[in-house]
Amino acid sequence: MFPPSLLRKSIEMPAKPTNCLNFTKTKLLELQAPAAGYSVFHDTTVEGLVLLIYPTGGSRFYVSKKIEGKSTRIKIGKFPDVSVDNARKKAHEILTAIAKGEAPTRKKEPKDTGINLDGLVNHYSDEYSMHHCSTWKETKANFRRYFADWLERPADSITQNEVQQRINQLGSGK
Image (cartoon, rainbow, N blue to C red; front, top):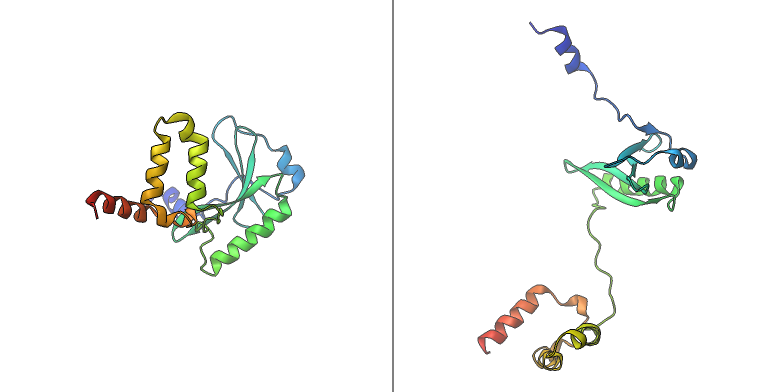
């Protein structure tokens, strides 16, 4: 019916990654950077912990895991800045979070910069427009006139949608 060579291939288990080793600082420092692309090394102690080595010689720890059917790499940090032990601990935390159904790849909320819109306008004016725009005074005055009620708001709380609504409102003459 089928040649024996086909039957064997269908029964064989998928091959494990070829670059598996027990991560130690000494072993990782001995690894050579590739000429192009990057090399991937898998830890034999923590499944999913990988080290990518780039042609520049830089290397980073990641957790490599399928999440909702998609292969995902979650950055842990640079080696040797992050020790092997710390990378393993962080990998365990990430893998535990994934097992609980949490999404460790979700982008974190932006940090509060502490600057309000008035401070941002002043910074832009002082650092850029004053030196590059001949109408910077008029632009600053118009901005203060049309956005006066927003000047004390934290700059990172203003959404693109709000700005577009304000521009539409100003354009309609209301």
